[in-house]
Length: 296
Image (cartoon, rainbow, N blue to C red; front, top):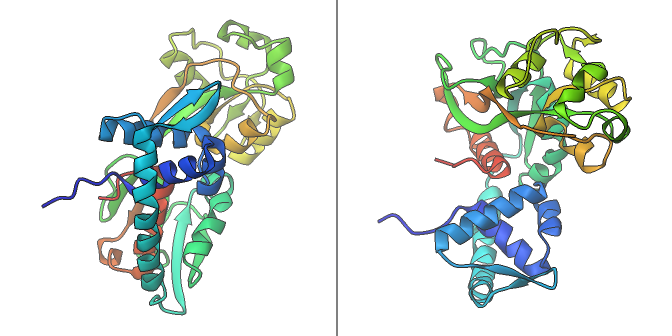
């Protein structure tokens, strides 16, 4: 019989939020955004059918149901963690995972989260490869994080997260010039040569005129476009998950919506023969928790 248990991500988000009475501190501990933690709490409340938190004079407090859950959940998570640590201790001393990663995802999203993975799995050594396209035929890779659709011939794929595009610029540009989408013609529109239709697609999906959007400085890599936007050279359309750090520290802002979902998503892709690799199993489980994707 299937157990009626919420996802581990929901439970971890609740337990940390309940102990600290802060979604922000919980997000820092889990290497997630505050909005992601808030979403996990809302999902848990929907799953249980009860409110777990309430705000009293702008301060976060547990409801009676939340206090009961915290009292029972903490020892259960402690026991689960002990079991996991005992399991991890059986990993081979020289376990290596060769992982292909889209360069921008590696630098902007994955690497900042890897210290957490290393703490959980100190015996696994990751080798990151950013050469495109990824090739499993010569056995040079065990798995890859890639952008695409559900069809990966000859490989298994696990959905990780959708890609959402937003307009970003410096706070100064937003305050002085870029307050509504109608102001876009007044600022340089930075172009990505590897996504030449990014502006056109965002404007079209937003119901705005999309003609004449191919002018402006052009860049051949995501990192160059990002640096140009931070330097105030213009506005750019960027994947939101790849500019989280710049948005959080205030170097960039998203002056207006909408958020436009891309037709492609991020997947963990690997040959079927690799599904039993202990290092891949460990990394896959950790990665699913980071993105909030279903583990099965």
